[in-house]
Length: 137
Image (tube, rainbow, N blue to C red; front, side, top):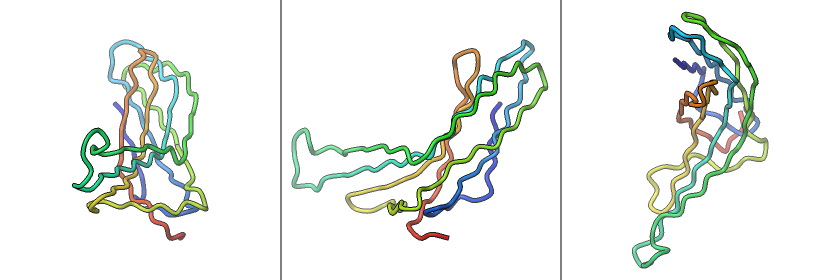
């Protein structure tokens, strides 16, 4: 089971985005925690106006990775055992694109993606929406 805690949900240029990921094994068999991946992902969706038709008339989606961190753990976990890690990425000082939703032609959204990489090959994934401003703290 993967649990992710964060202290805030709005960030700006130069901010450090910190979360605490806790993984708990309830399996009767030993499982292996390989590590964690933490990503701040920006998704831009552009919808053309009604005058555009044909193939290019659908929405265009662009995904941009703002920051990421990978932590290797390589730990065998037994039933009831808990492991906690602090994960962090920084919003670049020169980042100027802000969260924008419900606009007519463009949406810009941000999510924090936390992946617990397991020895079984199937990761545990949690996505947390966040707001990114263009104003520094």
